[in-house]
Image 1 (cartoon, helix red, strand yellow):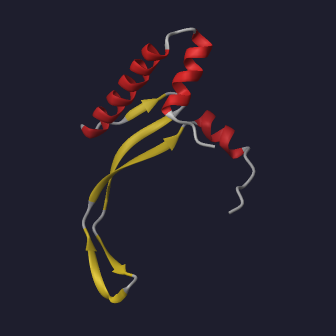
Image 2 (cartoon, rainbow, N blue to C red):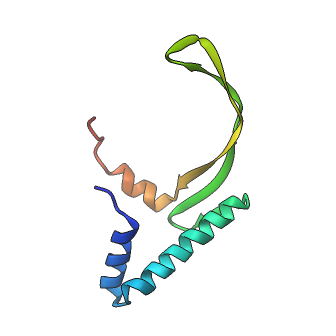
Image 3 (cartoon, rainbow, N blue to C red):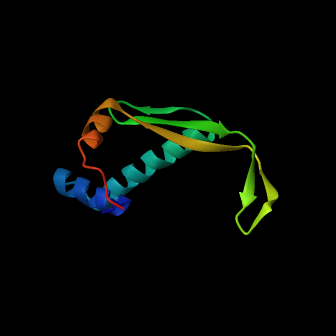
Length: 100
């Protein structure tokens, strides 16, 4: 199952009695501020949830699976990393391993 932004809005609206449009505005503003902070290379720490951080991946050489003899340079780039908070880690650790 996937939890979407729409699902969050509906649940929060039902539990609080706040109109869905107002909840959507708050949720969207929150996500916008998180994205803006990360774009400014700031760390976003949400206590008991986790930490979002921008890290730099080193440049490396990759291989084209269709032409393994050809090297493909992959440039360095910035990526967003997430480290779950203590409470989230404890909840997730209780889950049984997922079969693929």
